[in-house]
Amino acid sequence: MANPPVISLKSVASSSGASSSSTSDRKLFSAEQLILNLSNLELRENALHELSKKRENFHELAPLLWHSVGTIPALLQEIISVYPVLSPPTMTPAQSNRVCNALALLQCVASHADTRMLFLKAHLPLYLYAFLNTSSKSRPFEYLRLTSLGVIGALVKVDDSEVIRFLLQTEIVPLCLRTMENGSELSKTVATFIVQKVLLDEVGLEYMCTTAERFFALGRVLGNMVASLAEGPSPRLLKHIVRCYLRLTDNPRACDALGSCLPDLLRDANFSRCLYDDPPAGQWLEKLLQNINIGGRAPQGLAHMFVN
Image (tube, rainbow, N blue to C red; front, side, top):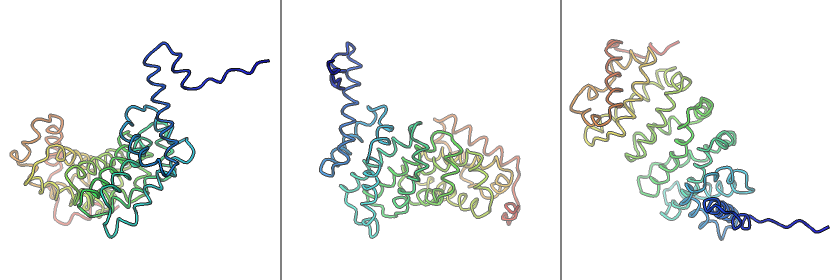
């Protein structure tokens, strides 16, 4: 009896009558080959660059990355390899670009429904925290922090309490607060978005309002950010700040406390004028001020409000 013919991916693509199917097969073959190249140190840098650049074209890239042998360890190797140049800060632009390409692939894994929880259960976000803990304002470090925040942002973008619970067991909130104070405008925006998503989850809101220390740490950072926006307005950043404040008013004790510590600039129509082109953000600000006025102004010495 004759052996059955061997059917390769290439032969399937060439025999297909639909050009879209053929294109899809070629893309899949290309992605698989590039993923295989990640395990080869001589080919890895180019593979990282190509996969990162074309990742939007490979719809099932995340499962391929996760389930292919040796790929995730290769990406982690890229991340760990730059730890020694974080302090003192001597990372070069080339090193930053390379590790950011690896982080972009991890972001694919973090954002895909089939691999998100696998990503969390492997505790992979912890490998990024060293990058968020840096303070150098040079472009390579800022790019590294921003890309790392993008991975965490991909995790929280889909509302999932399990994701929030995991992150709250780590140092993500203090690290985001640090970035909100010291990062570039874009990094501040992503970090504030992450904190916003934490607050929008019931577990996250309870966490931030359980103690006076946590609430006032967040309130101080948000207040400083509002003050800095008086010098250089950013509607996108202000929108996320307002949403954080509004969510805090859903907690009665936090709402009372905000009666005394909400920045006066948010009550200034001239300051908030930059939100006029964003109706939802303007409505959030209006609702925030309404909630604060209903709650009344809290007395001096607010820490007692957060004692159970």
